[in-house]
Length: 219
Ligand SMILES: C[S@@+](CC[C@H](N)C(=O)[O-])C[C@H]1O[C@@H](n2cnc3c(N)ncnc32)[C@H](O)[C@@H]1O
Image (cartoon, rainbow, N blue to C red; front, side, top):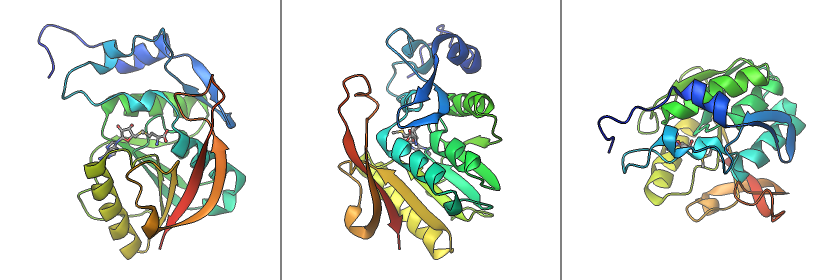
């Protein structure tokens, strides 16, 4: 719950001042504002029950593997209209744009993520439409050829809603690609694994620990 009297900083100003720009491990072509121990992220994100966790402030293993995959296989996105669902920092959206997508939309429920995506797109010299919305209980998006999803299967009820939305996308003829280190709620039996890469997760970049993260398609 938001507490009256505690003013939140402007997201863009806060991110620029407190989240240093760093290359993404395994995807060094992409630079992102990334939170560190000194960022004081709670001052922007809040600590209340209704404040969404600031997952956008880090590149996640699922986004890292999917970003790497798109940059290495530009034919997957070349000339296509791409929607990045649960875009967070915008990592996958930026990779799609750099790889030659015709248009890229990044959707996240968190307005702070949308601010970060705008800044990160500018740093990487790409044009991305960033939208703060929860679209997953609605119909498949229009004017979209490919939906990309990095690391969105970390919560059981969210995972059910996401896979139902992705099935509606497939039924509308939209291709779906998922990057995920097989988190607990990934419905992997319904998916086809098409690639695997060892990458660091957001909490283990400095320790050097890696997870086997996959690229999955939905039939
Ligand atoms: C674990 S992060 C992954 C971010 C990024 N895709 C990556 O791989 O680095 C999940 C993101 O999904 C967003 N999210 C959660 N529920 C969502 C929903 N219903 N619609 C859109 N985004 C959502 C969160 O705000 C968060 O930024």
